[in-house]
Length: 306
Image 1 (spheres, one colour):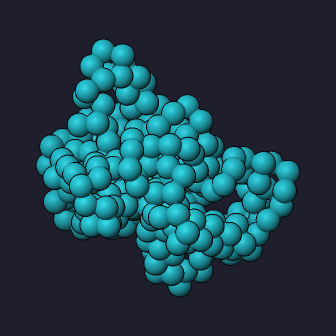
Image 2 (cartoon, rainbow, N blue to C red):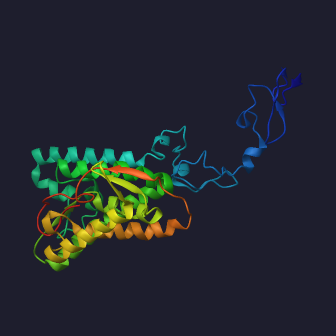
Image 3 (cartoon, rainbow, N blue to C red):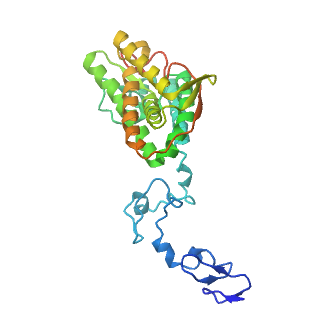
């Protein structure tokens, strides 16, 4: 029988703390229950307490992170803990909520659809559309296909790079792809307004990251046809280049340049990550046609869905 160092209770089966070496009863056996000094020296190498959103914990127990300054707990037990490793599904939800909002606005105030949801070549300074256009889509088939591709590829990349970096990749690539399409359209086709909607620029970046990390990754087009990822990406890029060269960057109502910009961003970021040496899963199933976000039509001019 031993005595608990915290409360003095006698314990028949005492617990020895591996961090401070003390002896404790069942009530005080956990390090946090007896104010174990070892907790101050633990840097959490496995990220057990890391939310994926704030990497600012330091040795002194102080943090310069935004979440600490505003008192928001993003840890596993906090109100925002769900979002860790689940941002793919958050983005999927935002896509469908935005699509529903588009339908409502289309029915009630159709003249507001463009100013709210579409990144337009003649209104590039509407900064909010840099983001809203990523989640907006041109029709049910458009958003359904993008959702399928994001559902299969997104979690793989998010688990590999972490939720915070995944959010940055998705949003930065999505905005850059849309701006590339709309900006070049404004230069090449002055006086002809065009618009861009869709998440394919962001999804193409995810595709590019995976292609670099594991080019031999097997995907199943239409859930039937097996194909290595490097070949699928090559065909996707080749198709976009060919169509752009023969019909323009918005040929078929598809934002071809946005696709290419997204892939380029993903390839560049994937090259940076590859030195870490971790591989992606060996098989994925992918349904759809013509690459991420391919769909007819768009808000007009040489822009379109992507």
